[in-house]
Image (cartoon, rainbow, N blue to C red; front, side):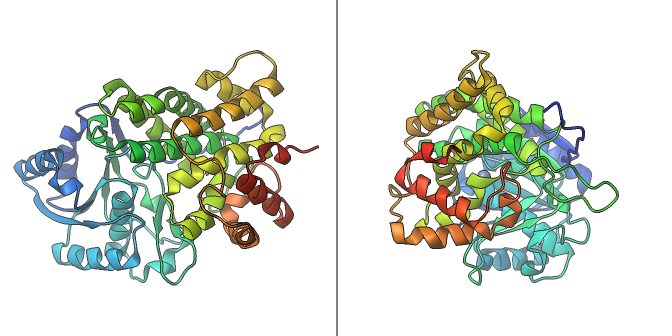
Length: 409
Ligand SMILES: [Zn+2]
């Protein structure tokens, strides 16, 4: 990263991480106002941990209104339903409690409480005109990083692919990440969200280096830089070492704690640096196969790194040292070992290795490649130029499993 001479970091006003930190939520909420609107789902709302949080909030003198019909993939109908309830509650702050979808629901609700709809008016980058209702984000999985990022992703029936609202105004005011809340997360969800967090770390670290245009409105994603790079590296090391343990033994407190730290660090890094190719291609793959975000990203990550290897040898070698994959001093060799270790991690987690394994048919590849090219903000964040032909070659390799076909000859 020696030749990157800029730094950009955008963060919540406070990020609290550690076992028991959820006990600080009520105090933070009371410092903002007296009426809190909670966005969560039907599983989380029934947990003793949520009951305890609710008790804390009420004892702190807050009026608590709970919307617990949040669902994965966040359809617009849920957003509308939630907003209607939120308007009646007229909250001083919105609290997201749960996985990425509940946090994203809290973000778009806080947005639409303050600014007129429809939500589609804010799709894309930097289209939110000003601050939203204050947000507190309390994740119960270690993965999306949504508690610290400027992004919310929704499913709009009018669009083929999921769409995102990206704006620094969507960064929660407070992020409270208590690893004890993740102990109930089942192994499959732990694996998918964990490899997603790992991809955030690795893709943010290897992303394009554009350098911001000082003076104008900065893009939401500005590429890897000197402030995000240490966070990416730390996250990659923590996750590579602890994710298999957290999947094997859900009660492994040290593994859960490290995963929480890793996922928050990865979120802080990618929320500014951005992700790239694995994330871009997951959009159409997820839409075509109805598979979870983390599963698709995990499947695609080794291919993305293979395509970018020669453009990111020092970064991949640094990742190899951070994760313990290799430290031979031979940069090219360690970079390849790093990519191979991502492949092995994916296999350990039981994530399919090819698009064919996901049920994608060969004749669908042209369309997948075309759709992936429309995710321009992530395609352009890839450290090598990706044109239509390169993208087609990429999905072919990910379909057949021939990763080494992506090495430039
Ligand atoms: Zn992701």
